[in-house]
Image (cartoon, rainbow, N blue to C red; front, side, top):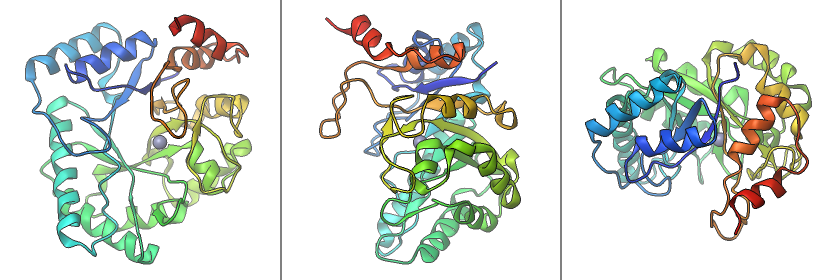
Length: 303
Ligand SMILES: [Zn+2]
């Protein structure tokens, strides 16, 4: 059975709200931030709520091992020109791992980092140094390095760069990879032939290291290095390619997470209007594109 879910919010009741939102989309997994992705303000974790969330997951056949946390994208392990900031990022990621352990979550996706004004090679060395401090064996949760679009000086936009980071990590039990189809397309990989990508990947990195897949269409052409997600079938990758990727046998047990935009969300305003996830999940499960799905979403949620 396809393991499919979406990004959901971590609400007033923390992860309990996340589970409820995922269930409303008929998802069997989900991904969340432990607070706003754009800041590092975090609330203490309430054990009662965690227990309730775990029970609700069990009752609805959501395997907690498929649930994924995402680290905020403002921390940056690649640049240590400001040592205080770099240390802050390290401390914060460490605290996020502790929070994941408390939540019972064993996977956290991380954008490797942005080299800014230094070479990517130097950036990658800083990431390795930071992750070796973070992964000191006192926490359980794994860090999954996300493949990036290569916007600006982003590290981790090629198989080689991801491989270089992994090779530098001493505690390799706690490291894995999260693929993102939009980022792969924007980084220049051909999503018309995903098996070719997996072949190339497996020449460098064991496919078992892939522990999560972000399933997104892309607003831009292959190789654009842009990183703008599109709804399924409304981008340059296309529904059929995304469907093939979702059902690829080699990634059968890997949770797939949608990070597609809300309907009505524009590039300028981050205003969220209607979530598309119930409809996108339905199309993936039915293996059939519904050309009216945008209209159906507006009808269901609209006034
Ligand atoms: Zn992603």
